[in-house]
Image 1 (tube, rainbow, N blue to C red):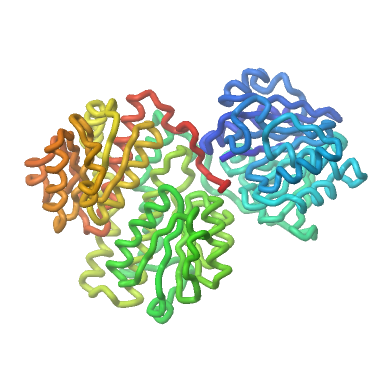
Image 2: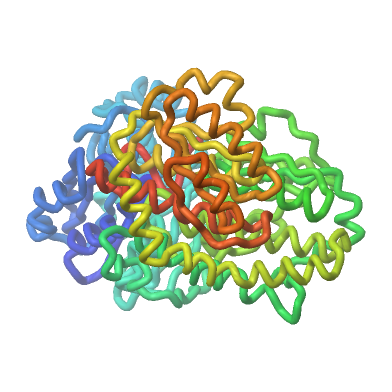
Length: 613
């Protein structure tokens, strides 16, 4: 959600900014712009629409001269997508120009104060308030640094800011709170960006800014300050993965590439934590005494990560006999949750910057609960704030709709559940060894799901059903939780109305929506619940539904008697079956979206990293 890039160096800035913004397109955006400094002149070019339009307006960056600049891709919050509401935003007198990721919660109050002091506004955004507020203090005689410092002291909300001042050529100031921002160390140049891929082509040495941190930098120097204004030192962290990991690598879309990367991603997540028949969770120690005294576990997240939390309820409760309550992060703070030392709060987030999830994490810590984060991005805000963190090691995920990040989060939940069972001795040794072996074999079995023969069958079914108006997903127990994510994928990238229900709930209302030709995807991988799921399938069949079944070899013969079409996946323990079931649903959504002509990697209205509430 919103992307920021900044550069100071010896080269022409605009092409570098455009290249960096292109690497941030996955975050989702509806407009783009740049501000380039050339001596004491600040030139702003911005426009609604895709980045290609901005590149066209600037002749690929050739028409804007200057070696310092800031760029931005905007995801609309305050004000509709338009040229006027696009970033960067200049202050009333043009002395200050700002790019911003986040939400200024008290912008209206600040705007009224600034208008009373003669400042004029030309957009509907909260960001223009920041530019005018910095200029307001600058007009009072404060220098650039102190003007920014005094402005952020007045701001309530979240922000990552890149700021230029007309009177300080060759200098950028950046500051952050609750929105991601990194600093890149170059040779005769320096950078800021919302995420590593934006600058990985130019530098591998980065520093992650903490909340309140400010950096003032030129082409040869960078001064860092903490929230109190005291100087601090930032040690560069070296990025080891290469740019190829963030390129398509011959696949038509990033999403397809990332679907096929799942075996490796799951293997990378599992292998370092499975040693000599035991689960070893990095440096995390959850003792048996601590676990025995747990009153409950909360699994707090948003979107797909929340559906991982739903899966965690079934898996952890089954193996560990510890109550688990999945809660949407956006509702967690307002539900007055019962929290204390006897509560473990799992915080699940791909980016580690999700605003609602970050707020829930802060509440959990304030109330004295222990927090354990499951995230992909090293050094992210959630990773730093949580008491413990388990990284998923999924690698960069560029497509907006998550695939491998979801799968690796689920793999971490499996690891955590087995680890807790290991500590609590709630699983017999023979059963534990079996589960350990099945978990180890998951990457190989995901590879089997991605076999060409399976993919061709899914493509065929997508070609049959891509014009359906409504699609319903049904299943029981863990299959029901998988339905939630499968349905979401279809909504996200194919723009189809899709709903997921526990199969037994279908008759309590939603079945009224079933009519001739309605597609129902029935997941039935649990042998113990198979017959009950088929009873629900018969109910929708009797009302004209077309049913696509997803099952395992032991149920293959039976399911053909009831459904119209079948996708078969390898068999594993029921607790780990969701790790396999989700893959064909991801593929189905991908191919349906492709046949509907949708922008698979950048679906409308969505953002990869949701840094506003």
